[in-house]
Length: 79
Picture 1 (spheres, rainbow, N blue to C red):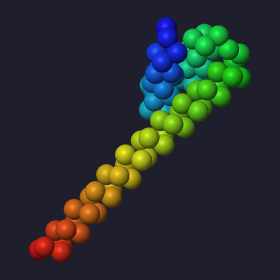
Picture 2 (picture 1 turned 90 degrees about the vertical axis):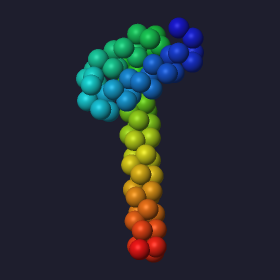
Picture 3 (picture 1 turned 90 degrees about the horizontal axis):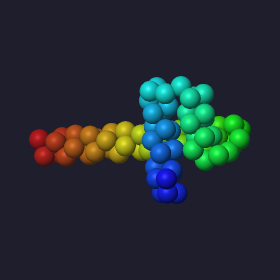
């Protein structure tokens, strides 16, 4: 696996754990094996990946809310 493939894998693991599709311990075990690092290091990596997943998701929600409000404002303005 290339460095880029491993980076993508950990990003997907972060999303999967964040959405409830994988247990934290399983994710840490996977990352520990993938990167050949100690449990504590893998745990930090999984937490970072989850934080990124959460932030990305919240950014999308906030952007969607912003678009909705802009659309509603346009309708009220033109209506």
